[in-house]
Length: 251
Image 1: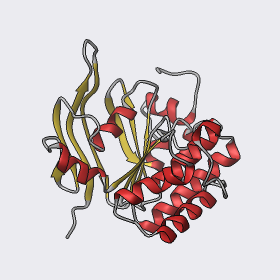
Image 2: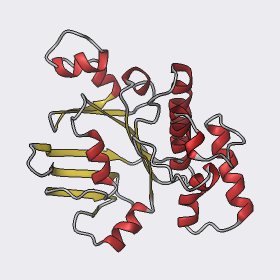
Image 3: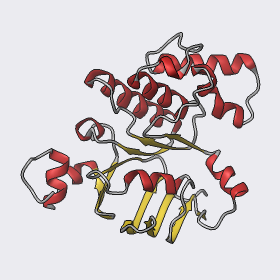
């Protein structure tokens, strides 16, 4: 029976040269099939945490388990195999400038061994329809707006239909209507695939319409972990201020 805890952090600490710790002994578990919203003020360590989960950064202390396997000591070859099972949208989109939009979206599929041209084209077209950019296959990233690049990043992150997907600001730079459509689409995708998702977003109001659980980072520590309803009802003044967007409070 596969482990219920798909992502598990135990005492994770991370710091960069000559700076204070970005993450300070973080313990966090994400159950299988959960859409987990990770929130917190700027520089709280949210993006760093996602990069640790996918193995792009290594922690200074602690253990990080993916489906029960501690990845902190894996070599690059074995880390590559872990990353191949994870879809990720980076905050800065991270599109390949020398590739067309279609080639960017097809990239994770090709790495997974999909070579049939018709199957690739069909999947790319499906992902472009999903983000309301049909017919963009032959466009180059340099000719896209920031919002269009974000949507192409979402299309690429979901191309593989991975069991684990990490999103860093999937709706940043989009108008409110498009943002809600993206959130709703990602929730529907997650439910259909039964995927385990961790999503970082500053759009708290819309994020909380789709999450199962929420964690809040503050100054490198996880100060809250619970259901969405529990987050909205939290009496911790920091959590209350942040999730409700209040101007007055300790933050």
